Length: 117
Length: 112
Image 1 (tube, rainbow over the protein chains, first blue to last red):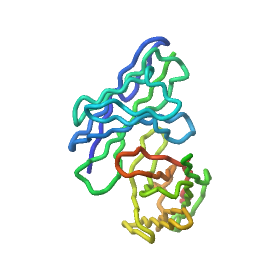
Image 2: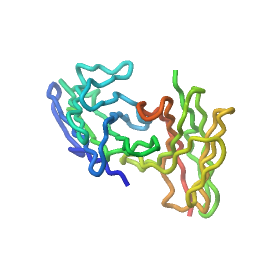
Image 3: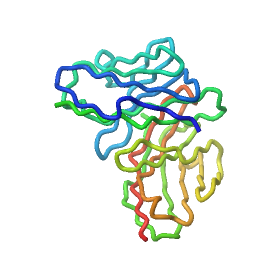
């Protein structure tokens, strides 16, 4: 099946610093990747849609200047949390869709747990 | 506003019995429906997807979709303790270009 990786799996940073999270599709090409965030005991919330070669589309309420997304290739999307604050501590999960598939299923990466101190 | 509703549970089912998980959605334009399983601290794992009204079976799992009632369900037959997890219902409205809208999940406990 389709495999999506994320790096790092967990990160601790100090308030005010920036953190970059990578999402890779390992055995397929993904023109679109999605970034989700999950707070404890809550469900996944879509943050943004990352399109290869173009600007990301952000969901309402998500600050595009704070969560920078770059999708420079068909297998890599990055999310940079700029000037991180404790309230940004969360589980960040990316997903990707194999566009050669006739189905619309999204495959999720293992997630990145961010803790801002 | 897109909404996906699930009973948060916990839903407790004896081992070997059938577990029935339900989900309703608000947007009639929704086109595809997914069930994911999520273990604590892990990312979601795709179990099944369904697009057409009716039933779809895959091993011990059966997804049921009723678009008129805006209702989708997941049945797990011969439930095993390893099935204990949170089950997330997700809906895609516009097709592959859209992200998924998730319900809050149902916590399922299979009692040995």
